[in-house]
Length: 243
Image (cartoon, rainbow, N blue to C red; front, side, top):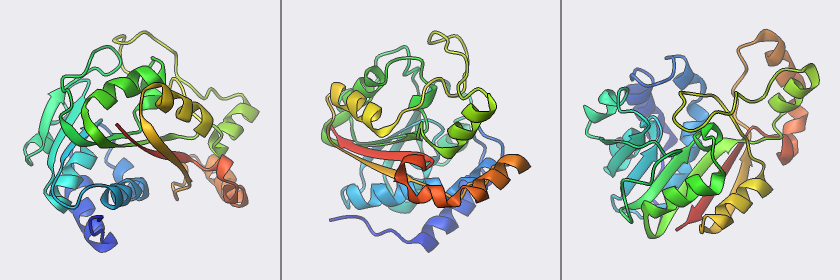
């Protein structure tokens, strides 16, 4: 049995709690990327147990806060620093400091579900190492939802064609913040999940209406719309698996 999901209720809570919130990104980020957050929460609602669950959000805490206000989940967020997590902590979300790229998890078999969204591409370690650490946070049978940019997305095709770098510099864990140091396609992410000991992985390629800010790239985005009919060129991978 899945949880009920209402787009209207989700958007009301998103506008109330996320858009005006104080997180890592600039304020304009959250209205622009609402569709991705909505997709993740819809997926979570369809796969999580109906009763309130123990949820770990690895990242900025937006998904933890949404799960708490939508379904009353016992939500925790873990990130490399807690400096930016006061906003969600004030709203009842537990917080923890965890440098996933360099440290073993501070939790063992604790959570019913983990949302690992837009993080793995920032980690300068093999994906299976990070995913193994994440798996250890889950109870047996626990749910993992992982999202990450698709390596073959149109943006990367254009960047390659014009000689613009796709990735940030690859530094050792702990050497400071970084952008995307690696991106995955479905076969590579499947390999990493299998090696991490996750089971029953499923992959969905998704295209959201996130128009680039750069006018040139925005024009190319609209011209490239027919390509999004081919899953290979879509922007994001949404993967689900079980511990």
